[in-house]
Image (cartoon, rainbow, N blue to C red; front, side):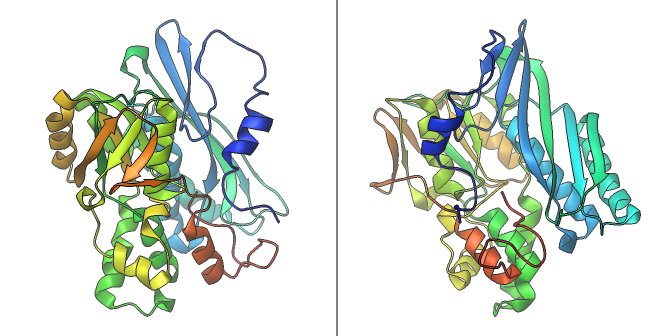
Length: 351
C-alpha cells in the first residue's frame, strides 16, 4: 500500500512538475511542492488560487463541520496576504447523507463565507455510490487583489525574523480529542483545553491582518507535517542560500497540546497544526506585525531569524521535513482503519 498523505517531493519533481500543460505568460506562480497557492497576473491584478480536497466530519455536527471545512480550504489563499474573495466548490456526497444534513452543512458554509466576504461563483453537487465521509469533494479558493500586495512563498531573506502563531499540533490535538476524547484516559481539564484547540484552526483573519500590518516576506500554514514541516517548506520555498534558525522555547504552546500529544505518543512538532502560521518578517516590521496579531487575541512568538545557508536549525540541530504526519496513525487507530487503509467511518479529517 502506498503511503497515506501528500505525495513526496521526489515523486512530484519527477512526475508532476515537468507536466503542467501549456506554458502561459500570465502564470506568475505555478505548482511547487510545499507551496500553498498559485497565481495568475492579469495585467497587474493578482488572481491567487488554491485547490484542496473537501473534508466533512459528521461527528462534529454539520454546522461546525462546514465551517471547519471552509476555513481549511480558504487558508491556502489567505497566506498570500490577500483576503479570499471567491469560491468554487464541488460536493460528491455519500448516498446516505440526507437533504436536511446537507442543508445544514451548506447553511454553515454560506454564513461563514458571507462573514468573510467570499462569494461562491460555481460548483457541483451530487450523490455518488462508493463515496463515504469524510472526503466528499473539493474546492478552489480564490483571492483577487493588487499583485504588488501578494506575500510570495519564496520571499524569506537573510535578516528577516521568524514568527510563529499558536504553536504545534493545534489541529491534531483539537480534532482527535473532539472525535475520540471519550476513549482517552485524560483528565477532564486536559480534555476540555485540548478540545478548545479545534476552534483555533482558522488562519484567514490572522494572515490578512499580519500582511496589512507590516512587511511580511513569506507566510505558510502549518498543516501536514506540522510546525517542523512548515519551517522546512518556508526555507525550501526561499531557495538556495536561506536558512531558518529557530529557538523552540520561544514558540507558543497552547493549553492541552503537550499533555494530549504525550498521551497519544504523537510528536507535537510534526503533527498537523492548521491554524498555526509561520511568517518571516523584515526587521522593521516585526513590532507592528506582532502587535496586530496579538490585537486579535492570537498568541505569537518571535522564534528565530533567517540566515544565509540552507535548511532549518532548531535549538542548534538541523531538522528535515517529516516524511509522515503522526496524526494519521493516531486517527487510524481510533477510527478503525483496515489493513488496506480503508476505515469504518470515513477518512481522516486533517489534511
